[in-house]
Image: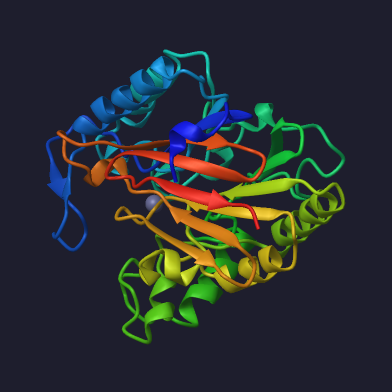
Amino acid sequence: MDRCSLPTPLFTFGVIADIQYADIDDGYNYTQTRRRYYRSSLQLLKNAQRSWSKSAVKPQFILQLGDIIDGFNKVHDTSERALDTVLREFNSSPVKVHHVWGNHEFYNFNRSALLHSRLDSRLHADGSPSGAPARADIYAYQFSPFPGFTFVVLDAYDVSLLGREESSEQYRNAMNVIKLHNNNDDLNCPPVSESLKQRFTMFNGGFSKDQLDWLDCVLSSADEKQERVTIVSHLPVHPNSTDPVCLAWNFNELLAILRSHSSVVCYMAGHAHDGGYCLDKDTGVHYLTLDGVIETPPNSDAYGTVSVYTDRMVLEGYGRVMNRVFMFS
Ligand code: ZN
């Protein structure tokens, strides 16, 4: 498709994932196979900010898809300082940032500290009757940047061992879920079993019934109004859009809800640093996993600008992020 032939978009937004900034030397991932550029990730965020600020149509908002700072900051007692550094970069422009929470947010901060923190962007939420899930400890909300378009931020660590007090009922429930499938002493180590079960690790999580019920309600309302809904969270939920070790625990329950609503057009996630994409042919929903900044070499980039039209969204990718067109079915 010739992008030059498209008219001015209705609006645009920026996407970036897994910055995982830390002021430490480069290192490697858990399996020692991928280099991680902890300091350079800040420069790659600067590159993205510069590009967004110079674009002809300025983004209306940025989606930060989680893991904004690395868990090593907790070890070095630099969580607040690292967060200051990254947020200073985001705040160098007046564009609103919607922060998604990933596992590294919970390595650095517990859930009660994150709620009402600088990473809680619910102040940008829409105050509609179905504006928030029933439980106040779930970080999920919706917003509408343009008439007819809704975005939903989901909490993929609502059911998780991360961020919850070990004495809490939620922690016990999450432990029961993971122990059904993972017998390893180190629960960060995936179970050796058929590929989809590898997702039952401590660095993943899932969506509670309260959150799924709320999402179902939001999507029913969007169906009625014939809106286009894009859903964002940290964990991928379609097996063909990611390495299965990165899937949300109950991805199938979330997929079932997304498949039952005509309003859903796109689901965006981070977490799997090599990215991924698939089109669900039955529903026409696009599942995008954005390439992670942290494993992107300093001479490249990893961010995108999405232009939204009445019949499609066009992702202009930079560096490792591929250009893609998401047609609305
Ligand atoms: Zn992650």
